[in-house]
Image (cartoon, rainbow, N blue to C red):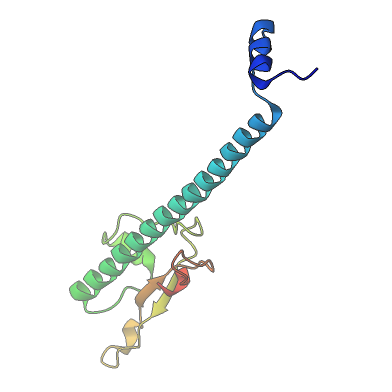
Length: 142
C-alpha cells in the first residue's frame, strides 16, 4: 500500500517523529562549513592587513626619526639604538612580520667626504622579513 506524501507527514506528526532528514542536515552542515571557511580567510587577511599597517607606520616613524636626527646633528645616526638613547624614539619597534626588534635591516649612508671620522651612519631601514605582502611586494622592499 502506497501512502501519499501528505498522509505520511500527518502520520509522522501524529506519531511524534517529525524532524529533519539526513540530507537536510548534511546540506545545512555543508553550508555552515563553507561560510566558516570564508570567514576564516577574511579574518586571516584582516590580521595580515593590520600587521602591514603597523609595519608601514613603524617604518615611517623610524625614517622620520632618522631625518630629524640628520637635521639636528648634520650626520646620520650610527645605529637605531642611538635614536633611542638620544630620545628621537622611545624604543625600537618590534617588526610585526618577524616579531623581533633585532631583524630590522639598515641601509648605510654614503660616507661624507667633509667628515670622514663620523662614519656613514644609518640612512634607511627596512623589514628583515622574507614574506610577501598582500599586494605581492616583499616586506623587505618597503
